[in-house]
Amino acid sequence: MSASAATVQTTADVLSGAHANDEREALARGLAAKHAGDDALEILRAAIKDEFPDRIALVSSFGAESAVLLHLVSEVDKSLPVIFLETEKHFAQTLSYRKKLANRLGLTDVRDIRPSKEALTFRDPSGDLWKHDADACCTLRKVEPLTGALDEFGAWITGRKQFHGGGRLNLPAFEASPTHIKVNPLARWSKADIDAYVEAHDLPAHPLVAQGYPSIGCWPCTHPAAGDDVRAGRWRGAAKTECGIHGR
Image (cartoon, rainbow, N blue to C red; front, side, top):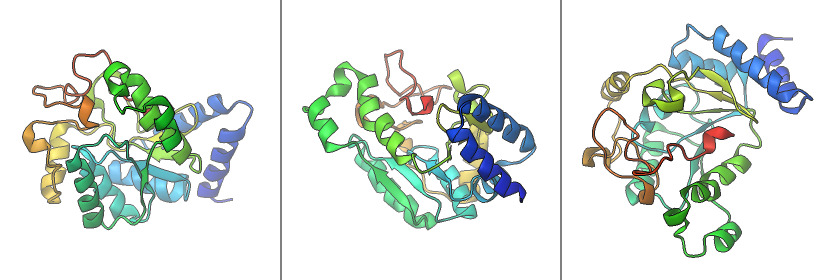
């Protein structure tokens, strides 16, 4: 059996085995060690072509820093599934940027994943759940739709980076979640690395970056921000720092 076939079999066992959590953690640690010396493009090639062929997707917000990872993925496989959580609360600029960037990079399988109409009608009929329970709004519009969208995959790629701080400070290239292996090819990249890559490849910026938005999510919970904390404008004034999708 080839190394890649062995990995696919191991992944299948991890997702369905009696000791799935422990096995998934061991698999993630093994992959992190195996690819410790790889750069971002090498990590992506290994994850997409060798470790999880046909069983991996990229989850992208098409936000302020998203162009870098999307460009890297396009260098490996333009047909890789890209999941965009269409929360129905995005800035109009984000929706326009999503189409522009996908077309520019030649991405052929961008999936707009929406919350179910039934759930919205029952749990957020006025569309203002975010005003009094931001966690519940994120669960309804992001966490639950992503859960279904990832059911067919054993791994998913994220754009998280250590320099974002908080729980990301020690982020590895491969990690285990309760249900999947997550791949973080840009974990060790700095803001300077991001900016240099964008310039080198002439990648278009999200329109709101020039207006002072260093991190961009849904419009009700995203504000301009200044300083070293790139996520300071998210859920401003609240203790909340994550939408919740990285808990799965």
